[in-house]
Image (cartoon, rainbow, N blue to C red; front, top):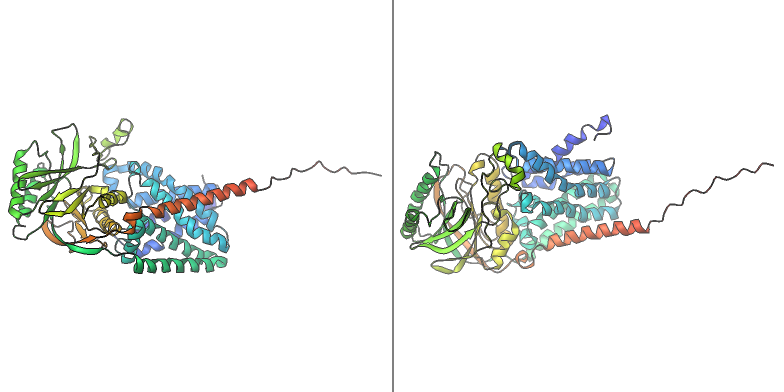
Length: 513
């Protein structure tokens, strides 16, 4: 609640400031902007007149951030996006309180040094909690905005996208200190210097993936197909494009998410057509079936490998579903959203375990399939890599959001996952953007834009060895949480040791002679 007429502007300013980082993500993709995008929000929070006010402006800024990064969901969720954003925005309240406590006033050098560690850790806490699938998953992590920066991708190979987020927020924090805290400028400069030295050391020291061969992977992107029978038309277009690959010697052909709209066990005619395609091009097809299963109840999204003799038996059922897009959380309470948007009319069923698929003809190559926004979860691709995946394949469909920033945002995640794992990633979609990234996150070949209907063959470099992130996991997250826990313990101890105020004594008596 506003307490003074002179402060009316702070609430809308908080919402706007929270939305500013969206420009660092695709489609604008102004990666350099991420290193200053939080400064206006932090300048606002540090001058909040009270902790309550800082909490309010942290919440409003978080709401603005979520709406901006997910604005392309408006056609599906309509006004329901606002209450979702209001809920998730609460996660920025602890960060806002940290900013006010550590950057408010004129921070001395010691407090400034602590801010350079704790403010990024507080931001990471909000990213970590909202990465839970029930809150929408890890979409729009600040570190993901650096998907095209080689130095940032090298950092990701050491500590995952989380380490990149910490670096970006630390630079923002240093800029605030340089601007408002003369006494702490030395600490800010020292902090920036340390970050630069760290990045340089990682660049020189972090192990690089060792290329161990090439796999020729064909991506089939049918493009936009309309009409009442669009599922059948899409299959037919994919079939035609795949036949054009004959003679181009692919080792694997990848179709996008929901590229097959019927269970193959119930449609032997589709199975025969896919097997004939595999024979014609001399390579197995990795398709994605979005259909009601004939062998169990419910609708599944499944990656299925099909060879010349039909399905090879390798099948992966999608495990992490898109909230509202593929299931409605607490449908008994929130089922009404299907009447105001494009939320799922029936919940998809979840798979139970990750799957590695052996590539026929190349037994040394094992494929780790992911479906749709599963490519946003660092832990899923890391698990597949630790189990022996040589190639990560993400089958996606963002046709619902064709003219928005969503296709570019989704495709950019392939670079982060490739760099984290030291494994190439193929991001194959129905309608674009399809992209391939090598084991250091570098682009391979040309992207297939949202206007393309084509089959393209990529010479994908395979790699051996392991990144530090694959070996050590989320150590950057654990370090950040430990720093926050230490700060909370410090505050508790200081409060306990603070001497109790001495109560005033009785008023002195005046002696009159």
